[in-house]
Image (tube, rainbow, N blue to C red; front, side, top):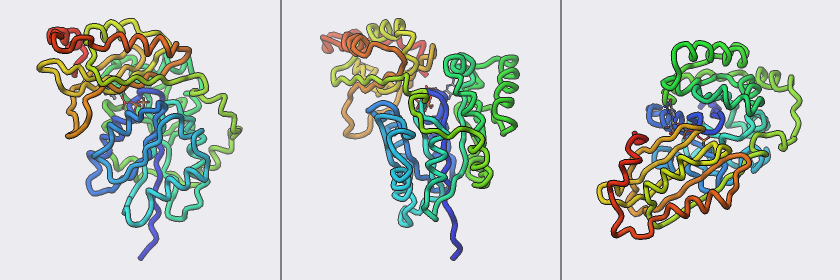
Length: 336
Ligand SMILES: Nc1nc2c(ncn2[C@@H]2O[C@H](COP(=O)(O)OP(=O)(O)OP(=O)(O)O)[C@@H](O)[C@H]2O)c(=O)[nH]1
């Protein structure tokens, strides 16, 4: 029997650009292809892993820091070896990096793998079409990330006007030095593009050698970011939560997680996402046996963690029995 290597595809992109959405799309549309995933989240509650679980053939979840710093090359090799063990019959491994990871370091770790069953499958860089220009002003290093990409997914095109999209495509194509740029919405990318279009190993090594491959983690975006977690078994009051969200500090770029309102008619799990100024709730279902509780991760630069936690603690419903279901009306405009 021939020896078939398992490609390891890295999906990177700044906070909230749509990596988990893309991964879920791949998992839902990959047909018979068995996908093993490594899901890395910056916060200590791995919301991404919770959103991917249940759909995937094999998953390793790593929270509390960026993969580029929490594991070294041998740690990465161990993770990949666990996913690539023959009994798992995995066809492809997808690493979803945290939104603050340095893709170059991840590429280097995968290339350093000595596992003969694996090969590097390329870097897919997800770009948030709506936030990219603002994000790259704050993080000029995002421009460089595009250079390492083998495929750029220009996501959230539904939030960008035609003229802006045209300009954005020009900028992104220029920065990625001619790599394919795929405009899309909700990460709807044909899986065949990711699993078949993989570069030669030598080609990537050559690209990387142009750059100074130092190990200085202080230059990574996450060196300036911190995450704050909040959880509560008590329901949250929707009006107070909306007031908190309306006045969230500017440095708090990303919030994600699940909210438990527990009000009559609104007992579902509410998935919350904020990305920059974007705010969205989605109704979902609690799994059988899953505790109905709020779990949120906030990621930002220069935020006052104590004040953020206190602000959320003040949203906890003090009298759930007499809480007013009409309070959910303030959530409705943001509900998908
Ligand atoms: N309008 C719109 N929203 C999108 C699109 N893609 C993703 N989203 C939403 O953007 C938010 C963030 O998406 P995620 O897929 O969680 O982003 P992520 O890159 O995994 O986030 P981090 O892991 O925190 O960096 C969610 O509310 C998604 O539903 C899109 O193409 N259009």
